[in-house]
Image (cartoon, rainbow, N blue to C red):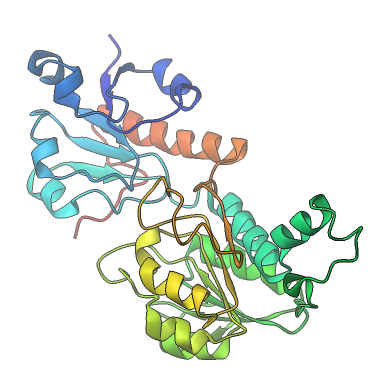
Length: 317
């Protein structure tokens, strides 16, 4: 008999196919599990697959009395109450670095689209303004990449790949993280110092209490009127209200965002701004990334059901 696995978060069916071939899947599809399944059905479930950004606290864990493993599909696990998991002796796993290349690619895409004003340029052609030689302030000549100072906030797997990619554009690269790393980039002791130095701030830090609203009004002011911020981390890292004000007041020049304070992001003051490029949290969504993340999920589940330690475990302190 295949082991039961509860799918806690909502995923496209295609992303669950490989798991269904190996395990008996109980798919709650993003709904509270006890609304979809009976207590009897949940009683012997020992493992759960979740999206790391979705809130998962102790009261939800208690719905599954035999739960022993929470396996996050993806790198993030910020939604999981790690303290609650630890007190219940529940292992937590994730997929570290599995989508790093894809996320780094979207970071560079957003950077180029924002700094080169690609969306206004696209509209300039489609609207007929180019053919009519109509003047547009958004079409003024921008600075290029050569010699531009790029600051990377966070030097994990994703941050390293972002730094390597932007360095290929003949830029200067600096970074700030909790500790120095053996990388060929300039280290800054504080995020504020990095923001003052760079003209593009790439946010690639892991979400958590210590990084919540780390990029606030002060950091945006330090970035300055010619500065851009790109966020592919989590929406919580940037104070979105402060960002809207900075973009509106032209305290900074622009932004590229793949993540938001609340997702999905509904049309509002942020989406109405012409100096921001938006994408719907697709940084890690490539075919290669999904295969790699699924490999990590399966490896974690196989190890757990075999009574072994998770190969991609999240430290619980």
